[in-house]
Image (cartoon, rainbow, N blue to C red; front, side):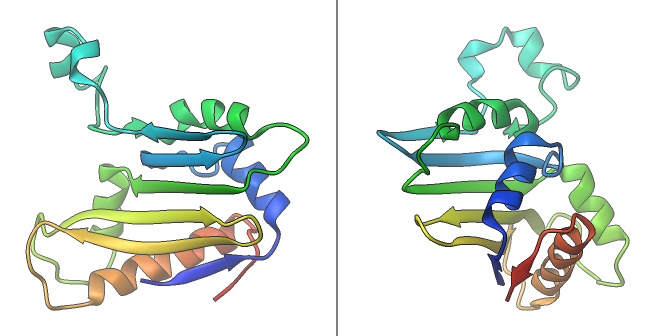
Length: 166
């Protein structure tokens, strides 16, 4: 787990909310506090879909909502003259990207042990911080997957010209 303090808040928020920069992620949770606190649960609601839609991977490829689908909603809640007093976004790397990241490394991780590469973005009214984490489906004493994700996210920020401090 590593914390990355974002040094150019306005630029980061523009990339997060107004571009496809973070569209390789799924949304698990969003909490945005402005004049109210708005909470979005990113889990797809089974009752909304027909049985055929729910079972069709072309319609519902993931258990969580794609960030690209929720991003405009979050942007509409944040947009305005006043800055939110707080925000939290919990994002998960899409499974196909997660598997490519693992396969492209020299890390020997048992298949299925890394459930999710997690990114938590927090804004407390002053500071924006991105915190990496890994969710495992079983016990793994090796910290190599966490190091892999920390390094990959650091490269992600550099490639997208997002300034940060560690």
